[in-house]
Amino acid sequence: MFSLRSSLGAAARRSLISSSKVTSNARGFCTTLSARVNSLHSLSEDEQMMKDMVSRFARETVQPLVSKMDEEEQMDPSVIKGLFEAGLMGVETPADFGGAEASFTSAIVVIEELAKIDPSVSVLCDVHNTLVNTVFRTYGNREIQEKYLPQLAENKLGCFCLSEASSGSDAFALQTRAVKDGDHYVINGSKMWITNSAEADIFLVFANVDPSKGYKGITCFVVERDMGVAIAKKEKKLGIRASSTCQLSFDDVRVPASNVLGEVGKGYKIAIEILNEGRIGIAAQMLGIAQGAFDVALPYLFQRKQFGSFIGDFQAMQHQYAQIAVDIEAARLLTYNAARLKEEGKPFVKEAAMAKLYASQVAERASSKAVEWMGGVGFTREVPAEKFYRDCKIGAIYEGTSNIQLQTIAKILSKEYKD
Image (tube, rainbow, N blue to C red; front, top):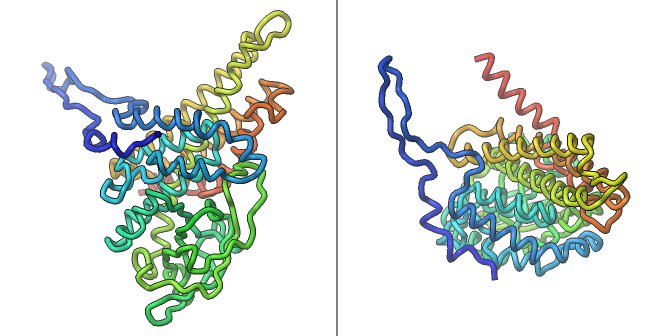
């Protein structure tokens, strides 16, 4: 059995940077004689262990089921069960609540490694960790954390319910209402495009308690499935087919007032801040797709011969896969840099937007080229190239479209240069 809980802990909290020895030269400038500055590829011992374990889990547990899940458009329950048993559904969750208490970069590595094999499994794990768990850890009071974080780490899948028919990129135009009724709130409305919703037991639902206040009436509620959440429709999608994406209906759903997560009227703040972090997760998923497609296609180039030579030895082909390799490396550095900035408590919104934007573009280029390089074989379902090609398109859409990322980057840049 794969498991992290017994192996992660104190080492995860060790510093990654060693001390430096500094002296001065004759002109008074400081010269570093001995300093260790890690590359962005450097992972801590625990992060590397996490990476290796997840890679093995993905190959041995997920890979045999990928084609079946894609064809049936259904996540195999054994995969979800395996993710929980491996400790991958509470990566950053404190050990006191049953989690692995690992770093944010560990979560990003998990998402990337899973996406190399199946982006559907990757996004299930991503949303659960970087959105749902993080909201509970960051904004939940002690009572809510004690009640829900252990469940989310052990066996209950979570989902993040923000989008609606009239509120996609304009998320704060949501129409779902929550009306106070004694010591409960009564929720009415609907949600769309909700990842994990077919299998989830715990729903973070954003609803407006006072539309007269606009977005300042938006509040986040913890809603359990048996409180009355209804699946209205499961979407049939181009890609990430095994990942459930559903419309949800809330008809007079009564939720205890104690299930308000954070403060009443501060849901907008939760949504903004958590989606900035979540974009690094999507960048990692797209990075995994790009690397997965590349890893599938490259060996083929040195197995198939045409005109007496391996097709990978033709100069035109060499230039293409060399360029894609550069693109993937650049996407990885952007993604890892955003993750480390977030860990360090430094501003990371611009870098997260850059990582998501670029990684989604690279995933499209890499998977498209993988299909082309493999020719007719790549166009069939016999190899994963065509699936990576279908799966990658969502990266330009969810958790902020590419245009939203560009707008975010431009807004921050304009402020930096105007000030």
